[in-house]
Amino acid sequence: MATTLRLFIPGLLATGRFDLADSAFPAPDAPALRWLLAHANARPVPAAADETLFRLFGALVPDGADLPVAAVARLADGGDPEDGWWLRADPVHLRPDLHGVLLADARVLAIEPVEAALLAAAFDQTFAADGLQLYVPHPDRWYLRLPADPGLRTYPLLDAIGRDINPLLPHGPAGGRWHALLTEIQMLFHHHPVNRAREERNQPSINSVWFWGGGTCPAGARAPAAGLYANDPLTRGLARLAGAAVGPVPEHASDWLDSASGEPDSLVVLETTRHDPADDDPARWADHVAEMERTWFTFCRRWLQAGKLAALYLYPGNGRVYALTGAARWRFWRRVRPWSAYVVPRP
Image (cartoon, helix red, strand yellow):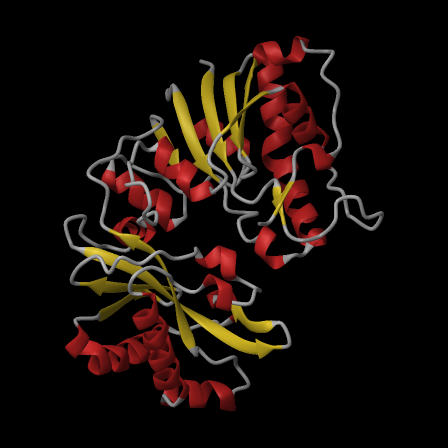
């Protein structure tokens, strides 16, 4: 039975700051992906991949507020959907530079669970009087519980990686207080035995946190497909909010097809390229695209042409969704275009 596949791939067509017109640009070897893009009908979706994901699940967020990533992702880490106002407070390393203060995320920190627990205990002891409590269910994902909405707007962690944080700090009516709180946290962590031990091991210190994604869980959500396949905590949290089962991401398109037998439609979230726009490594991005060409795009093109796939919706993180059906193979007038026609730079 033909089925419908939604492939959600943040970062696939949202590059870093490298120049696509540069002769040294390593264009990916991905003829099937380029065919899919050329033969699809495209329409706009939110430029921010996470916002598109919320909309796919019908999870409404008030205008003028952060996406409540913290409250939703925490559901995948064992949290309760009725459990208050949450803010991500992810561990980071800040490094002064000629261009400002640059941020490195937890991927380079290799944080041990015991380190996260010790720093959280020091945080809770220091800031208990302010009504703040830090939860660290995963070494790389930290959550701050607040008694109420502080009226704060933030920038996603992904937007801050490798950049000067000064223009990206939390803002809003309470912005000044939160800047001061960040300074206090940095002083607390700097002197903590966890970081002294890391310095002795020549590891980067866990010297700050990044506040982002604040809010409460949306009132409800609905599954956008009968079959959901995702490893990332946000999608898994949205699935839990929707009361839907979610399976692990198949390693190969053929594995998905076997798993999806009998499902009228599926959503698969591939995280392969999520961090590529922030990392500014065009060769690595090209390798990731080529990898998905071998494992997904070649098969999607083949199945569309053979009628095995009724429809494909590709969400590549460039502010567009590309829709194809089997009829796409008859659009012979659609020419393959250069990558620059599809790829958008990191803001």
